[in-house]
Length: 510
Ligand SMILES: Cc1cc2nc3c(=O)[nH]c(=O)nc-3n(C[C@H](O)[C@H](O)[C@H](O)COP(=O)(O)OP(=O)(O)OC[C@H]3O[C@@H](n4cnc5c(N)ncnc54)[C@H](O)[C@@H]3O)c2cc1C
Image 1 (tube, helix red, strand yellow):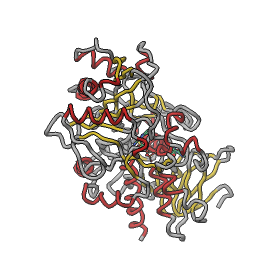
Image 2 (tube, protein in one colour):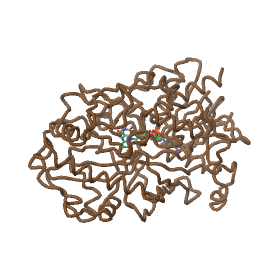
Image 3 (cartoon, helix red, strand yellow):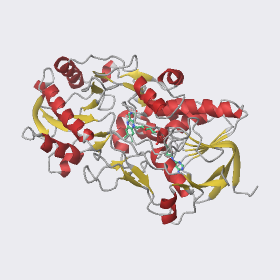
Image 4 (cartoon, helix red, strand yellow):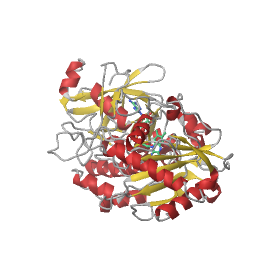
């Protein structure tokens, strides 16, 4: 073996949300060796990462890959997609809102060809999660957020929910469940829950930190390992005796496949990348939860206490035939004016926001390369608000109207001095749609770019055992395998994909 080659039983590419679960679980067996290739540094002892309430300070910083979107003619072209470059991945810089996907989400996956991923069998994987999932602690429940919950409950007639994971729901308002430790506001991210307790104790777990995987090593159709570049510029080949498991996330997993010659033939040929496998679905089916924002100035400062400044939320079902909620709102105890400011709105000194989002958006985007150089970021074209019947934009318009209704109701109304944006003069459907789309933001949930599906679905990239179609010795386990978007925030779904992947890998190894 050449000097620069290392060999392990499994090579996990990406020590992020799903990758941390898989690396931790596989190394429970001391006879199994695992290498984790992680582009970012460790999160151990990093208060800036581990303190949940500091999440906003990480956006756009040196621990963020910070992906731009392509021009969005019907949306906001300025959205930056934050993706964490640190152990624990996005679970180390997100808000850790923790929803078990709804039964209707899993059953939709099953119908989309993900055999074995229905609601009943998936329940077991939630029970296995090691994260400390608890409701926002009493001391973190801000007075204005409490009043938002009361106002929404009384004016919309939706149930008040204490523990969104206790039973399936179609509508409701309440404080979220979070993966955190309320006593010190410390994250219970994937790395904290799965890696920190074991990473210094298991000689069979090898973390390559600040090491970037740029190309797969393939022998015909068998994945043998991955070529990586370390922080100090050394190039290594990390080989897998059993399997390579891609956990680099919905942006970087398809990016790595494409640079390895696995993807839509015509696209690869146009860039001069030798085609190893024509797999047309790689990068397709780019999903997200787009949101808009409505901001109010408050009469004065808001009490300080909070878990992470967006601790409560509201779900509405407008269409009684819909399988789950069809509108969601986060309530922010801050004036979230970053996007409206571009249209000339001013940030009030004190304020709050509601961000309506589309649980089941209909627009579908696409990720593709613009260069054969692996250093060049891929293009992310979400095609926001391009669905034929304009469902996505109409949902946000409904969202703004419902948000206004809640804001007019006590006990929330007396806090609010005026609506800052879009402003009370913006009333018509078209004006509201224009505003909602131009200030649109992302809830940071890209998914679906290597979707799981049945053998006759030519856009499926992995089969229901998460194996990459047409290749051997390689699986994908991260947000990219989502066939459809979960109605709720996706992180717990990603962790459950990790837990199920471990079982599938173990089953094949026996
Ligand atoms: C700001 C923000 C807030 C969010 N809030 C919530 C929330 O409150 N609740 C919720 O449910 N969801 C939330 N999400 C979404 C959720 O965090 C993600 O969907 C989920 O964490 C994705 O997990 P993953 O395993 O697919 O990828 P990641 O967790 O992103 O892991 C990918 C890992 O791979 C590494 N990597 C990537 N490419 C390479 C490479 N080529 N070589 C080596 N390493 C590589 C990265 O450094 C990273 O550690 C949020 C996301 C963001 C960004």
